[in-house]
Image: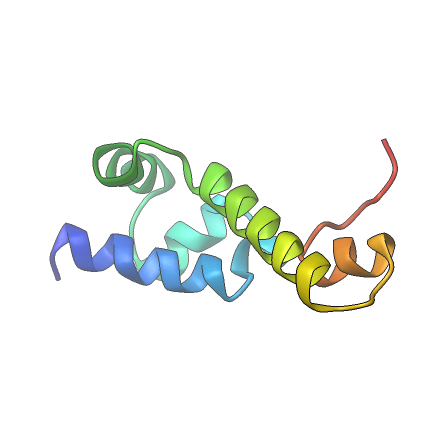
Length: 87
């Protein structure tokens, strides 16, 4: 399997919320590679870490829900994958 394919698989998992309930190490293990190698691949292909990509996905999800639903901000935060709404 090629490195671009591995990054693509990781992106699909991140978009389904994998990192909302798992960590980067678990993501790497699921992909059959080490976490440092996964970090290198993300840096090479996306110039971001898996955690940064997951945060961006959560924000995009939240923005979409703000625009398309009548949910409260707390409900949107939880539905978007944010585990905690307090600072």
